[in-house]
Image (tube, rainbow, N blue to C red; front, side):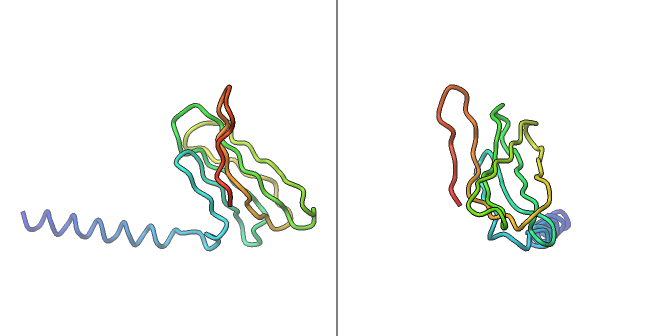
Length: 113
């Protein structure tokens, strides 16, 4: 019984260590909700990404700005379903503004940055 408890404790410690090691270096641009996550990727933060986290058949999207384009708002859709991630093309530094869930016949639900 002691061996099993030691093994469980070790697994929890290793799992926590792995989670902290995989945290993005640019978490300041990470916007999460139960149904979606938006963030920026690559070394110069020139790529936006949106991941669908919910199994609800609703599409998710992110709205962001990009340096060099003034205040123009870009929209990146993920229509592929739960567990999938969609990426924008590479360009100027991305600033995440909000992540949204598109709800049929209702207003979209968004989380502001």
